[in-house]
Length: 146
Image (tube, rainbow, N blue to C red; front, top):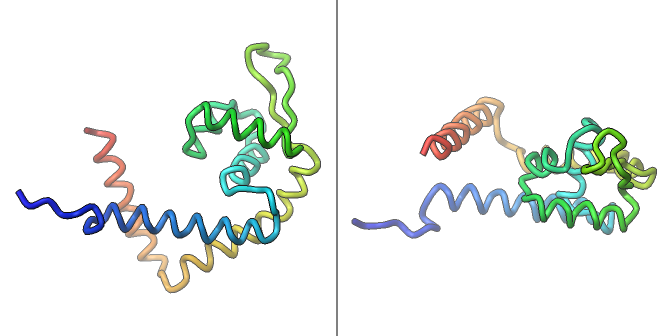
């Protein structure tokens, strides 16, 4: 059986595209917010929209394991983007809140994200995007079924 090299597969194209987008997006974020990563920005966006999410739920949304999420939250607390306190309803969990400094970032991020998305999708039609989403969803479903 002749096995194509990883670089000759669609999975290489998908992964390299994601990596290039993340580098591009991180550069643009870092130009405006020096100590913010893409993942930290996503964390702020999710917490802002869904303030009652648990740490585990946020980790799932940003594709991180629990240990990585704990480190990220610790870093963001140290940087004063987040505040952590005991959850009065469940003492085994912490309540995570966005600080004023974090809220300032939430004012700065949306135009950067809009620019990143618009620039990276330039020349791609809505139909092509719909097709891509359908195809990627099928790949994901196939992997989940296995």
